[in-house]
Image (cartoon, rainbow over all chains, first blue to last red; front, side):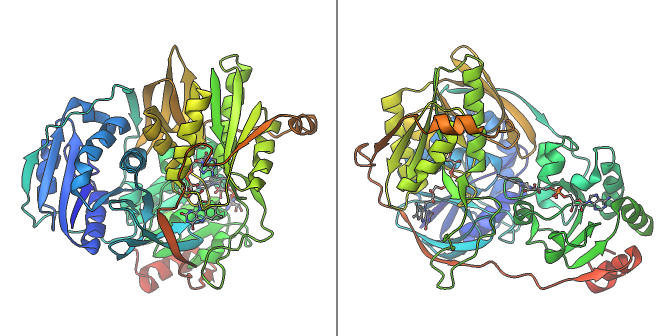
Length: 309
Length: 250
Ligand SMILES: Cc1cc2nc3c(=O)[nH]c(=O)nc-3n(C[C@H](O)[C@H](O)[C@H](O)COP(=O)(O)OP(=O)(O)OC[C@H]3O[C@@H](n4cnc5c(N)ncnc54)[C@H](O)[C@@H]3O)c2cc1C
Ligand SMILES: Cc1cc2nc3c(=O)[nH]c(=O)nc-3n(C[C@H](O)[C@H](O)[C@H](O)COP(=O)(O)OP(=O)(O)OC[C@H]3O[C@@H](n4cnc5c(N)ncnc54)[C@H](O)[C@@H]3O)c2cc1C
């Protein structure tokens, strides 16, 4: 069996989600090759060659693959696809964008967001916002999978010495042009990689009040998250949304402040190791999943917490 | 321009689903069913395009059992002009749904297809992308803004690091994210009017689509339970627990 992992990277480095995806590939078992598609992505290719357990790295370096345009990346992966028994990528917005195209063009199903490998053709995945876990078996010859970032322990980023091979297939469908992006400048750890997250909800009342959480986060080396209500209300940008339809996180410590604990929010954070809830309503559902609940006004409790750290 | 919108019948987002004790699935008996919330956003966007004079007709498609007519009627009450039901009792997976949609796109020749970014039951987030692939069209997923231009659409997408803007050639598939718009509620007169709007029915076989599922669900189990936590009385106690009991901060 030969497995292709499509790397999540920024042309210079390999993202942690790729290490998680390689871990899932290792659990399936077989020869693991990594595809790095991008523009001026040689450094990311080098980094991929050092990942533990990887036997070969394919580097497709072309302007057509800049900005991970789904149509072009999918066409490339489809070209390479028939050589493999499994094609995997991380469940990121990039992976979710191109991978279903790959599956459809190969005429196979995609199994989204796997959380465990049972065997070479059988996988677990959460459904209904994580309220149920389905064990599913694929009858397709090529298994196309996306991998949940919180579900596998990442493999080591070094220790490997895979051969690097250039891929000169260029597929530019010309269907989509990239105009611009507005990437939020991060002064703190990335949500999906942070070991501590402080998250605020509608109870924060406005964007300025998030400064209370920032101060705590800085002392703890934490990332800042938010509920959908806080994002919809414009307190904070969209990339901070935790939940079923936002980011899925599982840090060592998740502190939910002024968040009620709707199922859609819980879906994104209930696998956290330790959950703390600060909410003035003792009946808020967040307390049902919290290891430590504090029934208090956040505007008193958070500054107090800040002063004790 | 004609706009095709997909609507999926799903368990209402307020329902806390329970896994059946025989582990064959989740309990759907007497559970409230609704239009997938992302599809409500898709309908709203299409109706706004019609109100702005950009679109002439909004056609909604649902694929599944005859009960999906309810969700089509909801979409018609929200302003769609007519409905298409692809009726089947088969377990329809995204690839089969995309094949049905490809056939309907050939029949209907829409200028734009809008789907939800994910269905809140299976959480696959695949169908729109698969439709685009099979129909050979461009895609703009997770849209939070859509501007129709001359033969193109410029779409702002919600991505992991923030926002991205791309321009796609029409016809294209757009999948909706939460902040694309705020869907309206249907008024009573519009609900009455919707009853008279036409719904065409096909079977997957009429569309030449083979729907045999590729993925078999072996079992469905509840997630691991979290053990009950405690209520702390003071911030001081909280900090003490985090340091000395949970040992997650130092
Ligand atoms: C299709 C769909 C997808 C969704 N996806 C997501 C998702 O990915 N992520 C997500 O988070 N939500 C999602 N939601 C929304 C979700 O259903 C809830 O509406 C949302 O999570 C509520 O956010 P909240 O807890 O901040 O707000 P609320 O439910 O309004 O809760 C605010 C809480 O703050 C507390 N509070 C207020 N003031 C104070 C104070 N001074 N001190 C202490 N506590 C205070 C209140 O007691 C209350 O419990 C989705 C919904 C739908 C329909
Ligand atoms: C009786 C029954 C049993 C099923 N059992 C299983 C099972 O065991 N395992 C399994 O994986 N699937 C099963 N399915 C299929 C499943 O319900 C989904 O329809 C399918 O997997 C699509 O996935 P999704 O909705 O998560 O797609 P997503 O890709 O998340 O959906 C995105 C968007 O695609 C559109 N869309 C999706 N489905 C439809 C539709 N039917 N009609 C119109 N638009 C649609 C909507 O706009 C939606 O917002 C079953 C279906 C039925 C009817």
